[in-house]
Image (cartoon, rainbow, N blue to C red; front, side, top):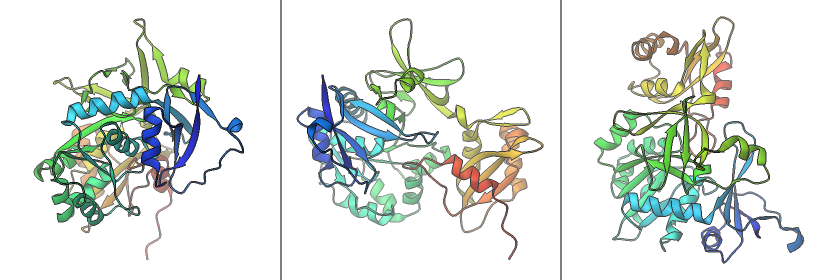
Length: 389
């Protein structure tokens, strides 16, 4: 059996109601498109696309390759994810949505609220600002638990603003994920007495499924021999719409019959048994025959007072094959000296990981909510430097 699939833009006023109907089976499955997307209705019910009966939501994700993929999320998987999340963070409460719901982190805010009988408060659209976040937080119902989900770039901006910090302190849990999280940023949040819960996951796992390095109830995580993170449990997607080739590449079944998602992330378990994601397999830079993972380099760079955000990329180089370049967003004091950057990274990670050039930009290019667009950053890093004024 199957069910009809309807398209709806992420900024549609009835999105939350349509999602609730998709989850409880009273409405069609929902494919959430980007805000403002033009939605074409089929000429007749006969022409309407269909998905397997259990599928409730389809999310389109480009991933790191830029090739569109429609991920099939079942109602059962979304319910398992939402219920496990609420058990981990303390039970039902009010949610503030500040992420686009055509991405899984934003959609999950609506889904968790729907599954617990609550209504998510949607912050006004437009560029993210600490003042608008604080105003939206003040409109949440008084009493009961309060939650929100943000990405690291948003946390940086909120910590830089007094009203933003005060608003964050009113939440019982601030879920933080979507991209790498520098340890220095977590330290700043702790110092500001903000209850941050780090999350790791992806569209294919209904969003975050590992919180503070520990899998949610029912979720399993392990690291394969090649360093890739594997994830299993009731939160896994059913697959990809019309792409059995992607299903075969992404999902595997072991000898015990357990179905695993083979991620593109590299990870390890620390001494306390917590999962640490150190980067992506396809982001590794090979310079002079040495593999450099950008994540640890970026974590070091943002410990420098002048650096607000960092994206480390490899660019073609005749001598090294690839040269390590740091694309930085800096504070008013200007960029750090290249020699200081190289000395810091060399001391901790070795000479090969030390950036050979710094590129300063007003803001890092992104894809999705808060994810650095490494292709675009690499393009910026390969541009010839502007001539002196």
